[in-house]
Amino acid sequence: IAQDLSKKEAKADILELKENLEKYHPGLNRYTSGDSTDYFFELVNSRIDETTKVLDLYREVTYLLNKVRCGHTRPRLSESAKEKFVANNRFLPIMVKFLGDKLYVKEVLDQTLEIEKGDEILSINGLGIKSITQQIFEHHSSDGFINESKFRLTERYFSYYYQLYLNHDHATFELQLKNKSGEIIQVGCEGA
Image 1 (tube, rainbow, N blue to C red):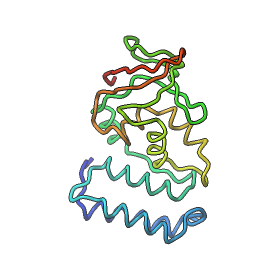
Image 2: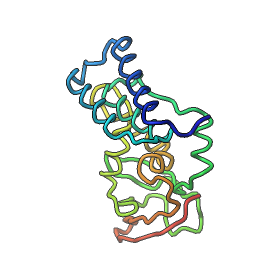
Image 3: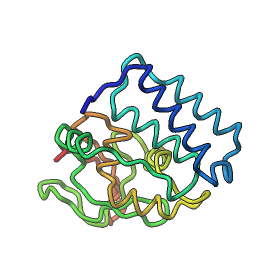
């Protein structure tokens, strides 16, 4: 599989996506007006470089499909691109759970870390959880403006989505946590 596309190829793929959505999606403008949809497609076109990696194009497609606001309209990354991404990245070694809009450690996958189940994650690599959540949500489709499915999907695949959408190719993490006694702690770790 080719991992890079020319600017012309990437723009052609975006145009084909737009044409297919307009032709086949019955609820395309139910939550997002046609003018707004056009704006988002133009925005994505303006961000396409001379050479576009498959993962970068995928990120743009997930961003666009989020704007349709239809939970059944989602892209799928090819298995070979997904396997390459997983093989070439290191992921945050914890599992998480949202309670409201707060994020907590559900399970620690690296027992050498001084992190405990139930610790609240305040920030990762200097970025607050609210900002991280918003940025990941920009790539998830759901019906209308309902975020419940986005919370569940994000917590299930948090380490993967964090790496895919925010932490491209970095292997280290600096976490700010609030432990159960209310103490704010900093923990650095390597990805797994």
